[in-house]
Image 1 (spheres, rainbow over the protein chains, first blue to last red):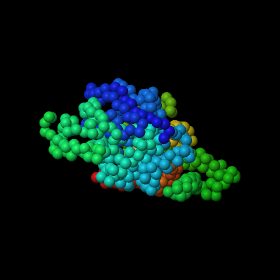
Image 2 (image 1 turned 90 degrees about the horizontal axis):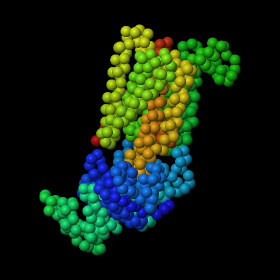
Image 3 (image 1 turned 90 degrees about the vertical axis):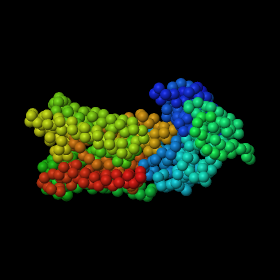
Image 4 (image 1 turned 60 degrees about the horizontal axis):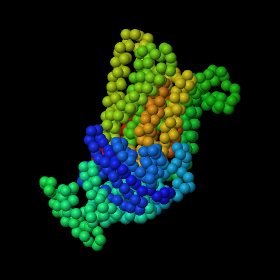
Length: 264
Length: 335
């Protein structure tokens, strides 16, 4: 890790045409903190990650990483501070895993510079850290969804950015691989990174996140420790489900019962 | 893979050199292999042999290599930009747009005014065509291979129709009509040093521009979001690659008409053996593409000698089956 980051968004506003997608949003993620981003479909989770990563233009507000404004950085320099692992995208060519991870070094390399010794070390460390070294020569198209997700995280690791934005990194994974990926994220966080992770699984979020941020209709409607946020009232109001929330072994367990027809 | 990689460079160079020698030695007037060797070694040869080799066969062979190399690199780069192994200047309608520009240059008489008018208009129309195809397919959201192909077919047939219109309008004027027809036939028959001098600088600019973006093209394979996340200015890179491929396609259309499938076949073969990384794919496609078109032109000259086959016939005979194969594979992949 080259530098300690910390992410801060102030008064963030994103519009698509006339529609406001994110309205005056304030959000912070400290170094060594894993924050889960929760919310129903269409709440604005992906838009928020996209805006933070520079995929979507920002109408108003400011994004700071380690205290410096991202709007003053070029695309390349921004990528040294912050990276995004989007939802699974199909890759139409048989790129070897090693090359995908190596692409993480792009923001550190000149246009014509080949990979140097330091880059190769960073790539090797990333392959080892995400346990994908044995896949290095395999095609990205011919490994399992869980392995592919770990490869993309390894790419982010090789990129060496202190702030990670992850869009539903466990969505296409079976239970075993969900747990593996979440454990990896926990470990990456403990090394000092700031993680903002959009998740659908509330129990996974409660168990692995330091803090939860709940968005609905482009606004933050609740945030705090899992046991403070995950309450039956909020689940009914924001997620439109009747659910039971129980404290167990220091975390909250959410058991959904049924979908609500009408807003309460 | 590394062994294959190291082996492939000398093999590709050898293939190119062998085909170049063959292109010099074979032809309608009987020049012997020995005379070709004599000339290459700087020994004395009859002046008519020298003229045939230096003024006729050599520039034509070099031009074939140049066009093959350029079209293959352009194909590889377009496939990266569109994230679609089926993209190719011919299939995306880019060549057809370039041809429309060239025909327009003849039709309006701009060619008589300046020789540069034809390649200039060909490049400009190729660029406009690619931008339209890109705009149409990107508008639909994710660049699904079906959308890209449909947009390409649409733009290509529109350009083809406009070309036909110009041709039929010009038939009244025999001089212009004949000139257009002759140009539309395409191929490398009668092409020489002036054509090479015209095409080389433009194609070099395009080729270097593509090569400078080899890592960005790799990044684009991961999708826009990941490419931006690793610091690639996706819009700028797309624009520059489209410009570069338009320069190459336009220059190639200007000197030899529409030569299809080269940009599809060659990168596909290279990817199968050496993988999709552009660091390898681009130089290898350059060499193999040059050799491929050199070989195709040799066949075009010799198969029904003393007459010539159209160059596009040869490339299509090889390319069309591979296109169908890729199409079937893509369908299966998406199902």
